[in-house]
Length: 421
Image (cartoon, one colour):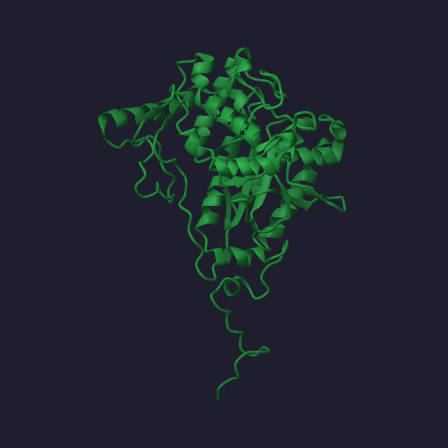
């Protein structure tokens, strides 16, 4: 991470602290022109600084750049939401976390980063992790070193201050029948979630790093959703998540239709989109496109890298335009910070961000922003939206479809009022 960025984050946190001690409102983070401010009654960002626990995290006021959700007016066409989300988000030598943060900023987008808790746990403290159905200290994705933890913390701070969401991808990423998350009970899921939170809230004690700034949010309140490893174990996870106050889950597979709540959580599953060159559709995730192209071999035929990347990009774009010109269902895309098949999927995702996020009526948002918007809508409006099939636009137009009553038919067509002479 560049020294200038590190200084900038420190200045933001320090400004918040100074404002708190002085008892006056600071201005640690600038708000984008036209962006709504914090919710009424919520402290402005930087106006408070309240360390939590050992100081690994701190409450610093309302999150910057988090727009207020607005209810659709009768007859108003819904925006096209697109969610780019990242499983197991962490910063390593590839610098993909920091890269896509910049891509998002340049294209008027915010994203969701599903942090793996063990990415903030040093290797020498691995025995602090007690995974369900496994011995203490085991993890299928390993742990981290001081440099990796420092770099990941830097990105998490910056991401949140820029309006992005920090979710969770839990810890050890266990898949399959032998102790995988698909076999876990509700109580075992609760233990896993508790540990994921704890590693975020106590990285300072676990690492001994006292010179790093805290994460500028209360993770108990920030954490409202997740995606399970390998999309397994959803049934019991949702029960545990509901009990713990989560608001959404993104662990399923769905068609491109408007979401609804299941078990008290918004079902924000990834979706099936066209797979160019195939008769079947593919899930909106880099890993699934890879498996459909090179199997589980993460570095296949280099001569096909460009073609495979174009295939994913074009499939995601076909899915986007199918919704944008059709039912306007939110498009949910999942990714990993990986250079599979020469990084072709990272290139594909970046090209999609650049094409779609600056279009009129498109909002590239985090899951938090999407569920805030969904919760603000008239339930009758959402029910109408859910009646639209994949790619189906309202036949009589959006004004009629979402109005309180059907719009009058134009004069001169069947069913129109007779012309008065």
